[in-house]
Image 1 (cartoon, rainbow over the protein chains, first blue to last red):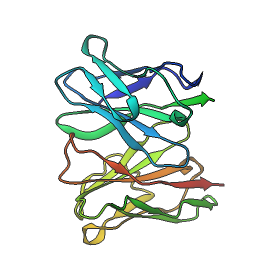
Image 2: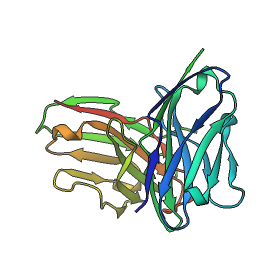
Image 3: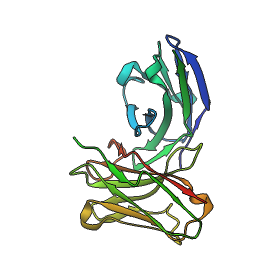
Length: 113
Length: 116
C-alpha cells in the first residue's frame, strides 16, 4: 500500500510570496499523483494530476507540481500567492492498477493580505 | 452541472446512538465512494460502489458501519452504535465510470459528525 507524507502542517505567508508544499510518497512502483485543494467552506477539488509524461504539471489557478521520481516527491508550487489561495492542500497517490487514493494529512496555507 | 450532494451537513449525537448520512452523486456517475476524514488527517476510503454493487469495503468497520446504494444512485452510510472515535467528516465522492486510477473523483461538502 502507498503512504503519503506532507512536510508542513501549516504555512503562513504574505500575498505575492512564493509557495512550495512538499509531498513524498512511499511506493516502489509506478504511481499516479494528485493535489487536491479545499477552500474554506467548500468541498475538496482537484488542483492537478500526474499520470505520465512531462514531470512538470500545470494545474488550475497558476499552480504547478513537479514529479521527481528519484526523490519520490511531487511538490506543489505557485510563484506568487493571493489571499484567495488560503486553503487546505492535500497530496494523494494511487497505483495505476489500484483506484484507491491514499491521501496525505494535508497542509493548511494561510495567505495574509 | 450539480455537484455531489450530502446531508446533513452537521450532526451531533451521543455515543451508542445511531446515525445515517445520505449522498446523492453527480447524475450519471457510476462509482461512489465514502471517505472518513478525522481531524488532522487526510481522507481515508471506507467503501466504494460501482452502480449498486460493493467494489471494496476492506476498510469499513463492519461491526458498526454499513452502507448501501439502492438502485445505483443515492447512497446511505450508517453507524450503529457510534463511538467517540467516529467523530470525523464523512465525505462522499463520485466518478464517471468504472473504478479506475485515472478517474477524477468529485467530492461532496461532507457531513461533520461529533460524537459526545
